[in-house]
Length: 20
Image (cartoon, rainbow, N blue to C red; front, side):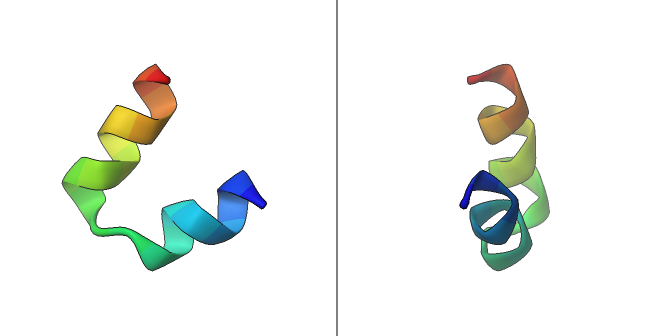
Protein backbone atom coordinates (compact mmCIF):
# COMPACT_ATOMS: atom_id res chain seq x y z
CA UNK A 1 0.00 0.00 0.00
CA UNK A 2 3.08 2.25 0.18
CA UNK A 3 2.94 2.74 -3.59
CA UNK A 4 -0.62 3.99 -3.27
CA UNK A 5 0.42 6.47 -0.61
CA UNK A 6 3.30 7.74 -2.74
CA UNK A 7 0.78 8.41 -5.53
CA UNK A 8 -1.59 10.15 -3.12
CA UNK A 9 1.02 12.32 -1.38
CA UNK A 10 2.82 15.25 -3.03
CA UNK A 11 6.36 15.14 -4.41
CA UNK A 12 8.28 16.22 -1.30
CA UNK A 13 6.23 13.71 0.67
CA UNK A 14 7.51 11.02 -1.67
CA UNK A 15 11.08 11.96 -0.78
CA UNK A 16 10.30 11.53 2.92
CA UNK A 17 8.57 8.21 2.17
CA UNK A 18 11.60 6.98 0.26
CA UNK A 19 13.89 7.94 3.12
CA UNK A 20 11.60 6.01 5.48
